[in-house]
Every structure is written in C-alpha cells, then in structure tokens.
Length: 499
Ligand SMILES: [Zn+2]
Image 1: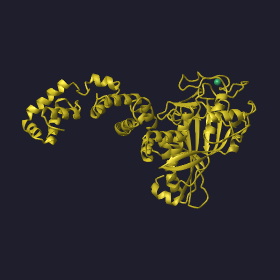
Image 2 (image 1 turned 120 degrees about the vertical axis):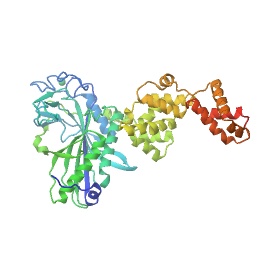
Image 3 (image 1 turned 135 degrees about the horizontal axis):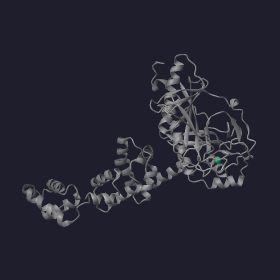
Image 4 (image 1 turned 30 degrees about the vertical axis):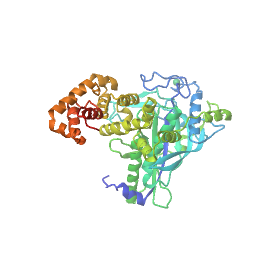
C-alpha cells in the first residue's frame, strides 16, 4: 500500500481516539504459579520444568499463595475491590509453547476489579480506570532458527523452551480511555510508566520491559467527534515505554488514513515494529467464545480472608505518586523543577545520591546537568550512564572538601563514566587534585607577577580588577588545578592591594 499517511496534527481534529491498555506482568515469585519449579530468568532450555508445567497426564496444579498475595497487593495499590471468592478458568487454545493446550487464567471472576491509577501528563492529572487485575500462567517460548529474522518465515526449525511455562503472570486491564485527544500517545506512555513504578514499589516484579517481564498490548480506535466509538485494534507486545507512545501514534495515523479513504477498520491484532515504528496486521481477533472458557476443575476457588486483605492493605508501601510529592517537598522544589527531574528519569538516582551524602541541590545539579547532557548525547538511559549515585556523592564530597574545583570535578566525572574507578582514585591517578600547597601556589603567583610587571603595577596602584589577568596566568601554570579564589587572594596579598 503506498497511500500517503496523514500527519498526526491533521488526524487529531478530525478523529477522537479511545485507547486501552492490557499489561502483563511476570511476578517475581520464587516458584511457578502451579508447581514448585524455579522462575529465574535464563537457564538452559527445558531445565526448569516438571510434570505440572509440562502438562503431563495425571499431574495436578496447586496455586502459589505468594502469587495470589502479590496480585491482591497490586489490586489494592490500584484501588480495586478484591473478590471475596473467585475461580480460575481454563482458556482453551492450541499453541506449541503451551503444553496443556489450555492456559489457566481467570475469566468472569477476576481477583481484583474496578480500580484506577492517577497519572500526570504535561502537569495535568489524568485518572485511568482499571477494569480488572487477574492472575494466570505464562506460556513457554518458541524459538525459530535457521532464518535471517528469527521469525517463523524462512526458519528451518522451531524449538520450544518450557522454562517460562507456568510463571505467574498478572494481567492488568484498563477501562477504555476516551477524551485524551492529541495527548493519547502520551497518556498511554504515562500510564505504563506509572504502573511500572507502582509495581516496582510493591516489589512484586522486576518490571523489565526488555526482558519481557512487563509486556504491553495497546488498544486503539478512532471515531469522528461526537460519534460512536470505532472498531479497535490491539497492538501486541510493545516492549518499551517509547514504543507504547509510538504504537498509539502510528496506529491513530494508520486508522485515520483507512477511514479517510472510506475504508473500515478490521478488528485484529497488530504487530509493532521497533525499527520503523509502524504496525502490521497480525491475526483477526478472537472473541471470548472462541476460547471456550470454563471453571478450572483442578483448582479450589480463591477466597481471600477479608482480614488478610485488610492486613495487606495496611502494609502497602508509599506509592510512587505520594512518594514523589513528599520528595518534592523535602527537596524544596517547584512543580517545574520536579517535572524536569521526572522527565529525565532521575528521581531515584537523585534520591540515592542524597542518601549517599550529597545535598539535594548538588545531587540535582550533577544528574540534570553534566550526566543528563551525556545521556542525551549518547542516547543512553541516565541510570545506565556509568556513574552511580555513590560516585556522584563522592565527587561532590571532594568539591566540598576543596580538593576539586567544579571544572576539575567535571573532568573526573568524565573518567568515572568511562569506568576508570571511583572519583578519589581517578583524582589521584590523574593528578587532578586542586593545588592547595601554599608554597607551590606562592611560587606560581610570584612567577606571574614577575612576568607581568605592568599589570602588577596597576594592581599595586589600586586597580584591583587588573588582577584577573594574573589569576589567569597562575591558572595556566597550574593547569587549572588551583582554586581561583585562593589565587586571587594570594595575588592581592603579595601586591599589598585590598580585595
Ligand atoms: Zn513445574
């Protein structure tokens, strides 16, 4: 198809988007959902399996209490109601990496329902409704080898690894989100970001999108203003925050071009392509009836004791939004300042730097200044830049102790980022410490005075401003490693002038 796609700005006034997000989170439990197999990432293929997760005849599942607990905590953090009684359901479909030919999931009786998550987009609060949070098991993984792309097309063999089969998976489904207009892509991203932070604060998952422990499907539909919601598509497995935003944007543009041409949107799943940022058609979307759900006969219902749920609720940690608000107050920052820290993804780094001994102002200065600049240049995440909060605090400590000037500290930081060691080690190894030895400084000052007699005379005569040239000369001979203020004081003292 070679149709020219409309620009995003042209789409928005003519169509209203409705988005929705389904997020799968692999729980960080020690063992799988219905058996005792270990869950850690990696491991030789098919070494973390047993008759239950391989679906062998006669094996019986037993629900993992830690996974149920984690799911209830997620539900509570998202202000959901927790079911007092609910059941698992069999979702029947065939997939080579799903050995039982059904997935144990939840259908019409999810563990948590009807909650919300508040996010902020461009400083505006947006409340995202949560329809349900339910518990299920993950599938295994199929590997297509022999082809160029790793996809099934062109592959000579397909290999199945069941290590992941049966890992507890929580699915979090939003209610449809209308009314976000041009902000829809950013709202989608803000939601996943906030959700990830909530899950991390709960400690229920390592939420690594690149390893697939947090996976996102993005639903998008368009309708002309004031009309009924359109047919939606589901873009599968969008695996980075940036991609969530891009997937909504590109799907809005694609749907608008179809609708513009008088076409009809097909309800289907679509694949998102990281390289091009667009989506292509997957399979036509099954409806729930295709899965022939029925209550799982091998498992007892879950009936969480209300007092246990109340206990879990009371023990929830401070949620990220409140945590950020408290930090903003403690650090004495304006909304705008806090926003720039959030945008840079630097909250936790700054927090850890302060915990390691730096002042809020110093921690913020390094992470939003020098280190953000480097991250932007290299396209790296700030957290992966190569400097740790501890090193940044140590660097600032050296500045505070007068051992490094700001300029020297920036040089040291460059070497820290390059992986050469701690700031103190680098300062010593590269001889970057401020020259504070008064004898050496006095000699350099005398040398500068002797070399610039005319300027020295001016200073002696009361033109204190002329001392700048002498300071410059001393800084040059000390390779910028003297403290300019000390040098200036020393010059004025030697020339009997008053600062
Ligand atoms: Zn197992």
